[in-house]
Amino acid sequence: MFTASAKKKENIAEYLLYMWQIEDIIRASQLNIDRIQSEIIDLYSGLSDEQRKQLRDWYESLIDMMRAEGVTERGHLQINKNVIIELTDLHLRLLRSPREPFYTAAFYKALPYIVELRAKSKSDSAGELETCFNALYGILLLRLQHKEISPETQKAMKDISAFIMTLAEKYNLDKKGELEL
Image (cartoon, rainbow, N blue to C red; front, top):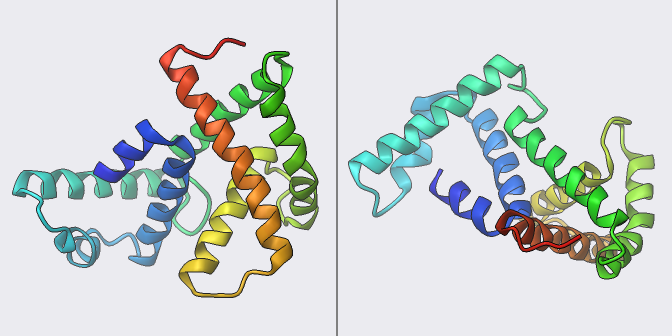
């Protein structure tokens, strides 16, 4: 909760990837709040009793949402889908703007990889941005598992990361009212 809140303010892309990781952690804990309490919450150092309670309440609310939305085994919470929707709206506005040649260039540099990933994907419903986030999350998981990542994949992820980082920066400017399109 505390990390998510900070990430949402600082970097929307990191926030979304973090929230996807939280969804997976909840699934790995079999949506069991007592297990999350003992394996995650209790391991946080420096939290007051009130902060621990807030963190537990946050996890419980996510568990409730996952059950209500039918994403206990796979998929993403609507709050996370809404981030993709919001980013997609901004992405389309940026592409239409003549003031954003660097953003457009970053997108077109990543586009061949996005097209290739979408072609390999089992889900036809994932849009361009969700495809990017799926790829970034997949790389995160591979790194956590200490698995080898091919040079070709590393190159693709470098361009996709640069594009998503640019989008996240534009998102922050837009939220501050400082983005002129």
